[in-house]
Image (cartoon, rainbow, N blue to C red):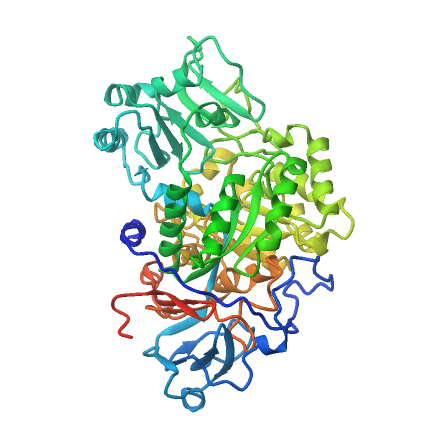
Length: 595
């Protein structure tokens, strides 16, 4: 059902090209959700255009009436209606009170008793990659080797001469025979076509013989690169076609890059699919080449989600001048926050960096504890890079999945002066040592987590790390109870961006196989919704302007087709947005909305 919605939204042809206002109101007083007294780091300031920028004493341009409005303000009562003037929320109250503010030019939206929430923030995306994947082969639904090969066979017939077959997002872990794929599976049906297919987590890929040849990989070499592994037949040294983490670059650098127009189309497709779920903001883990695409879309007033970009690079010093040249062109709709870096790989690929060896590591395994990333393979140099970024007031977002990887990045953050002021982040924080859970709050580190990964990992995690270590995996409840700021996202295109499927996973703890895993870490629906709306704005230094339905805040709002706070467990993952408003403008409207 999740893929049904992605396929439908990806088929939307027309772009939503909308003009946005740049004015913002001076900062509102807002309680720090961590309970800490650290002031925020000096983020890029909001765009001010004087006091006249705030729409005082003007009739609303739009009102929403007859809704069930969850404001996101803790312990606040529900409301019925909202008034919006230009791009700001100017009143919240009963339908009668708000209707009295309107004039004959005000657009009236009747929510029809539906649930109304603040716009959703996906706190971890690869947004252009999402749009590209929507146009590529998708193998996540393959249930066995035969289906896997059949899908590839069909996709090859649609390619132009010389075109690569890309995409994938496969996972074999729930197959009856979970043997890893190899080039011999696909070589017979991909003659003359170079193939590189990503595993669902993006930390492993499958290449056919033609792609391996392009990359110069054979039984004679090359050696494994730092932070990666070329999986080989132990008897012949022949590459199997599976490449892990840094080894994937050997093939990926041979793949022709999409041109600017193709990447703009991908961005547009991804934004449309996200708007249809009520998503109005993303925290994007961006490749350097994504930045000019974002700038172009912003200059064309074509952004229907706010993008906060963390630039993925191992060379911070080389990248900073490019970022500094773009920063003057940014505002609350597109902003460069800092850098994205990697500590390790993933659990599914057995490259997450663990304190103790993997439970299912074979005798003589090359990397029984997993792998540091190539950047973090020299931990002292990695720490120095983070200190360099910290000293320049940049926010770090560091990928860490294994318990030892999380421990080491927490140590690095703890060593920095005033680290809480920067609101540095750990992306994923999936597997934690028990003693590290409380450190997130103590140090002031944001826990950026993706609940839907739990649905996937829970099928095989205990085989990989054992039951004891799993008890502090996906520690949503313990982190929140300990005072940490936890924000939720998807990691799309690794998994679909559907926030409601993720919210349900955080609430029920079910895996894709329907089993409940680590029930002690489940949280309430309202807590999960808070992690998708309010908490991300603190992580983005925007809690004074976004995250709650409150007078003076930017008008990012979603009207849903399901009352997710009271619906059945089966209904919640199927929730969609009837209408999505970003910056006071309608960026998505369902054909069945009735407005």
